[in-house]
Image (cartoon, rainbow, N blue to C red; front, top):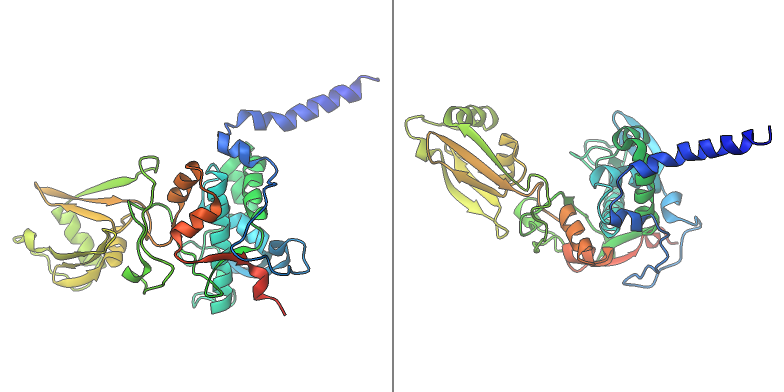
Length: 341
């Protein structure tokens, strides 16, 4: 009987640890699992902290998840947002940059007021409106045996940047971000209205981005059907195909700003939505009986590129350097200044 308890303990320990050995952990992720003990340096002195030891845990949010308004701490919200918005396999510094951007966006939304789509909550868990959010159950399904490992990776990125946000002229910025750029990010003025800290800058991602360039091929009849369904008023004469698209205007970053399609002027963003394209970095090829549309990158292109942030992190850049690169003339500070007496 003396040997039953130790053997049982060893069997239980092996069962708990075995899944961790079955998961392939890239080197950057192994480094991220270590204790974060480097001092966090802000652009300005850290102001007096809130009573809560960790700022993110002390701030309670009202978040619309599906059709239900839920109360959760900033820490819990960021855990679901960062996990949903950026792959946990990304470099730790990219994940920290993502945590700061998501936290800043949330504080910005709290100060400007709830979105029209959900007046009962400051933010929601929809990528189409605010930021994507995955709860614990969904993350368990997604990560499987790697759940505890990757969950800890995300938690570390949040904890090591606790309460840190981006300011422009003493206000939290609209910290927009997107999946991948194509050479340059887009200036906000090209699609939303000019914001001084959302300017076009070089971005360094490339072939490592899945589907970095995508070509959509279709017949002229298919193009005509989509255009007539999605863009009211277009007139596309099958006898005069060369006249369908004209007067293409591009932004300084190389993205489609606007074009004339079948006599209707549309923006690049409207054209992208109509045809379900990955970005407005669009090029056309009208040769032959069919034609194609090729896009580069993924997303609206404004603010921080997530794959670009990961590329910079792999170059040895820290999260602060990444954020200063993608957001012009901002400073890092603590959200506690927003709640100081």
